[in-house]
Structures are given as C-alpha cells and as structure tokens.
Length: 252
Image (cartoon, rainbow, N blue to C red; front, top):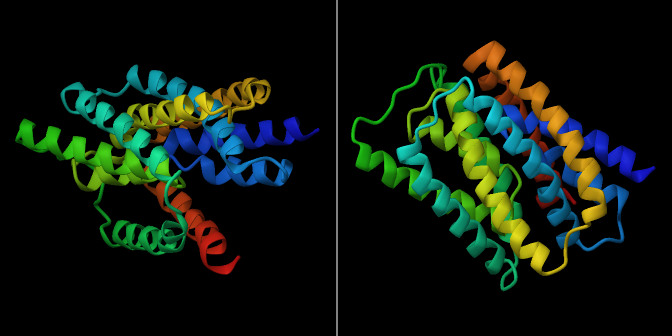
C-alpha cells in the first residue's frame, strides 16, 4: 500500500517540479511518513533517483519549444555537478541544522522580492557580455549545486529565481534551462548515495514512472500558459516551501 501512496505523491511532485522546481516539498515528507524507520539518506537517495527521470523528461519536452543557452549552460552544469558532490561530502562532516533554521527566512526574502517586482521574469533580458553570463552561470551552478547536495529543499526553485534575477531569463526559459542543472545535481547525489547503498531500487521504478507522468502534465501547462503562469506557480510553491521549512526548522 505504501508504494501506491508515494507513487501518487511522486506524480504530483513531478507536476510541480516541471514548472518551478520544489517537487521534493511534496514527495520527501510523504516518503518519511510512509517509511518512518528508514534512514534519511536512503529516502533522500530514493527520492532523487525517482525524480531525476521526470526532470530529464521535462527538459526534453522543453527543448522542443524553448532555446537552451548552451554556451552558458554547459559550464554551469559542470559546476552544479561538482558543487553537489562537495555538498554531499560536506553533509557527512557537519550538521545542516543552521540551514534548516535559516531556509524559511531566505525563501521569504525571495518571495517578497518576486512580489515587489511585478515585471520580474515577464520578459527575457539576457546579459550582453557572454563571458559575464558564463561566469555568473558557473557561480549559480556551484552555489545551488552545493546547497542541493548538502541540504536540498527548494533547490530547483532557487535555480529558477537565480536564472531570472541574475541571468535575466523570463520565468518560462528559466524553468526550462534550470532543469539541466537540476539533473546534474541529482545525478551527483545519486552516484554518491548509490555507492553508499542508500537507494531502494525496487521503489525507484514506480516513483520514476509516476514522476514522468506528472512532469508531462506540468511541462504541457507551463508551455501552454507561459511565463505569467510559471511566475504565479513559483510564488505559490515558494509560499508552501516557507510554511514547510518553518515547520521543520523552527517549530518542530
């Protein structure tokens, strides 16, 4: 019975993640509730092993309608992979409690900034200097990649926000391009956690299939309704992330 519940959660997580990231907000709590005696690393590794398939499918669907900025993305993808590996290694040495407590305040600042800037992400305003864009992309990949490997909640949403605010993407293009960095961060974590034996491969298959279905629906809606829809989904998901992270980090 548990696998049916978590598969349904994976479907909704894929839907949310395809649009603005943050699918872990949906699936991870359900996994922890369904398997309370499992090691956290095992559930996190299983979550990423299922989610990466939906993220990859979403990136493929976006690629058919949205232009990827490969000159910026390729170095950023490499940086995200390295950053995630470093973050996963760091979590074996130090506690993430300080991030758990700080996360709701960081997310609140992101939400308030997005609400205050009504025009944010409505139009694409690319950086004129290619070298500057590449450098900023690498920095984003390294920082968010480290965060995703070290802690993780909301990493996809942070990537979308960074692509909009720092690189000048509109929300639709940010959601599409950020998927490739998210694949890299997930892959790094899967390799490390899989090597450590922290993935339930028997559960990955139903999670992956459900996640792909949700990703198909989410990507279709984002492409149909455009940046305005993605922006409001981003605001909604970040709002939920604030509530969830505040509960986990400050109230529980």
